[in-house]
Length: 458
Image 1 (cartoon, rainbow, N blue to C red):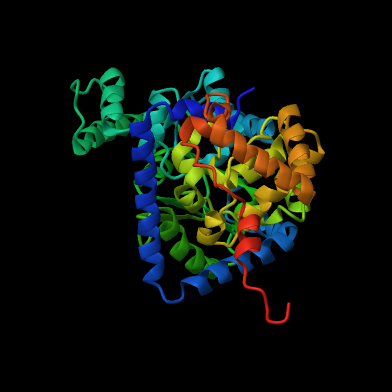
Image 2 (cartoon, helix red, strand yellow; image 1 turned 120 degrees about the vertical axis):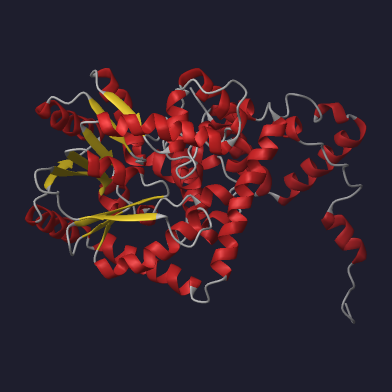
């Protein structure tokens, strides 16, 4: 079985790349901080967004019905999918109905979650991802490693080699402007030849029946305006009540994601152009189950900004592919077990529980608390593995008995001083990436009892 620890170990073999990955994401986190500190009402915006999402999730059924009614009135076809398989079939049936063979697709984490690309390609449909990062990883036959920066695990030299192999650019070329221009020319042909455009959805407005798609490259707009049919795929949690609510979320989204004031393109799609078709596919795929879990419903507030990725010390030094799920990082480690506890039981443990993810979340999701709660559920359900379960039981026994705790502590310190090889060896996971500390001569308790000042009269 694939586990985060095993995949992270592969990523960590290239220490220089790990350091670069860590520094790059921390740079994005610092940009986010500067943007947040420049807005006096930042915390009020976060609180407002959180409350809007709380209200929406508490009335989700009503807002979904309102959205469908308005969208239908706008001339949009609305489809409902209970799971990933239904979503993929709906998209394929629309393509099949028109006899299309080529589609262009802008970034959509929902379609990654549903493995739409693999499904359609298996049906003989050409699927071209048009987001630059997504196209790079698609050419490399890799999944995205980050929900906003899909190719953040790659350096410009890697991109140059990939484009040389697939687009015929000069060997050894690594100039970003040259490589971007090559991608632009390559993708323009795909846009013109495509029969259908597929996009994700950042926000769906119940009041109007319209959707908003945010991109920095304009690729969603190019695809949707050139193609005769536009399909927008969205999770049901993307609903917000009013058009006015966008003013809150659009101020938070780009600042949290990339540290820029606003996304370059925030495109509003309300109705199809004359002679064209627009479809919206609303997908559940475990979301109502998550909504019913009191401890985890807040995770559905996520606006997919990836601020939690950029700040997470574990994600930054383990890479997105180590999470073996469409949405990596701290938020993905909450969402994935809801879909399959056994398959993703390792992910809630891929965290230090430092709380930095919760601190930067623009909609105030209690991410680290939910990771801790998932650990308890997974242990109770028997999904933690024999070794971890046994270790936790032993630790519980030691930590709950002061006498045993003090005995184990003194014994451990003696062995670390006199037989350090028992801990400093390849069998100790901690030793693989760290130097074991020098053991103290005495415990803090012993030191405290000897040095504490006794109150007068004691």
